[in-house]
Image 1: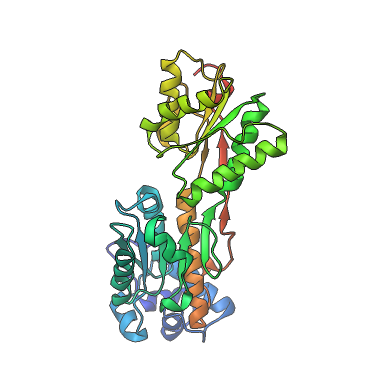
Image 2 (image 1 turned 180 degrees about the vertical axis):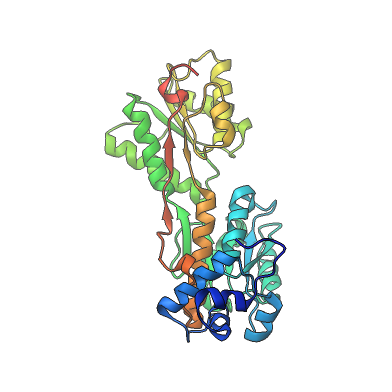
Length: 352
């Protein structure tokens, strides 16, 4: 990487790559005139030297904005927080784009439309939808026609919809893996505390839990209680499951925060975890390892999902423009992502 106080020029890149400045300029501007080994060599030299072309010059030369829009939940939302957001910014920068985030303050069709109008007016070249999955916005996605927008769109973690590019965690698979883990410990009465059932994520996890119970020949598909994903609902939900099944010996909770409330209620009742009741969550929050006992959970690599969505969007933009893909997104990636089981003492027992 070049020193931060030294401006790297087209001439520097051309000299290192052994090509003309015009060739470097064509690569930077996405021209199809440079292909194969020459393009790869120039891109490698750009990365090595840390060359950053003038955005204004590129915009004037190409008539493009080199900006990607992101529609996010009110309060910015999980995709736009922490490491996921920073990884998206870095990946966009690597491919020559900047990000413009527009928050959707509510769920109405007017608010969704206003968010897209805001991005369209600023001439973004594509949109990542990480917005609300309820209300009119959910219906809007169900009825979405690609012809409605003058740019490609990728939808994140909101279910599969015909004609839409989507990147999502396989929450049905997660539900099955969680249930299988609890059953492998000899648990026979496995209840599930779901998230809000108007969310695709919640419905998929419920379906996975049910499918695995049936596959294992276990009863209990009625042992389902809905939560709001918050810790405060954990106690009432556990008590509701116990009323449905006094022999309840395991709970798969669709949120680590709600699982924290379940652990608190179990302790209040004098239940031993996991001896009397095995408890596991999903999300693998950083603090889950510090619950008492430490919580078995399932991690979901949200930063990776964000980057995969970004790369897919750039591929769609390049395809639409008939341009070669940047090296960072040259290889297609699987848009269906898997959770990873993280076993801790809330199901396996042992000291902590």
